Length: 78
Length: 415
Image (cartoon, rainbow over all chains, first blue to last red; front, side):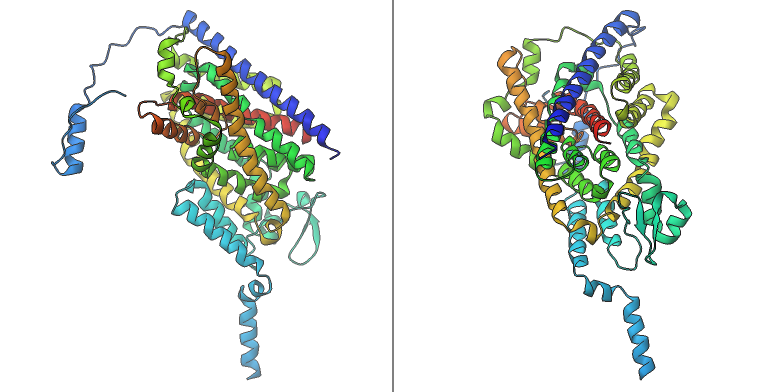
């Protein structure tokens, strides 16, 4: 029981330090994002990749897994 | 006939059977090893760690095998096989290998020096993507709340009669981070390394059981159905990241600098974590370093760490009331960390317009990415369209930083 004071002090110091460090990380990261957005926003935009159509890949996968018996009825985004 | 019985007697003494018969505690250790092997191999609970640890337990408990780790007393004295005593720190490594066997060589060269946990942290960093955290920076604060379990169990352990150093090592199990728990225990209470490592990794393996249990006790269905994507649409983030690659490269350098200034004792962990992440984010220029950090080096370190940590669990070191306290205390630390993360989200939701799913708080403890996957499973059980994985990863990753900082504080004050 003689160490309870030490334990409470450690809890106070420990939790405060963890919160402070993470707050610094959070606000430091916000500052970093603002600076990067200002100084080095993405250079030349990369040519847009052609839209990916997953249907043929999914159909082929279902075909292979079900031995040609299964078919896809609907594909929807979650 | 006399000669024949002498030979049989000597043969009997040569085997481990006679010693096992004299000390049945070995049988209990084999049982523990088999249960851990079963959990790792059949149940697939963290097999990469549980299998080496369990096998280490098994081989350490065969009398005469010389594979059990011999713990030095507080003054550094170890008992050699001939009964003489010597200060371990004065023994050259080749003498340790010769007198005490190769497992002690591995333990004192790689574990006791604190080398392997930071190397594993480097691998963890190389496998971690800080993107979800950078996209949801606000959620990172819940990684701090979830460290409460560490300190609550520290106080409980002190009340139960553990020394402050032992209590700190026990509490750090609540950080749900194996390398951090091992690193802290090596510094504070090395004699408890075996049971603490086993408790830490076992509870990490049991995350799919413990998180749903705590969530069920503390959260309502309505809270678990909070859809974070809908909330994002209602209250969109004002800040857009235009150059994620640059931010991801600067982030590990900045975090290391901040932590090094405020909590230098956490640098071996955070520094290596961020170095691993940096070589990943730089890309092709450092891809060879990334490959080594995330594959070869990490796997090698895991094998040595697992086997030698398991080998610290010899019958005489493990079978005592203190171990029982560690197993119970470790579970409490884990559950309290999850609960405090959830409770902080609940308090946040009382005041904020943009509501947060309490599962984001539950993942504030480390155990990346399993905790996030488990919470995503819980949310989709209530609403199949409610995917919280990316949001949980934000607090989950900040939990790794939080637990390393908490470890740094404990080492600073108690080391």
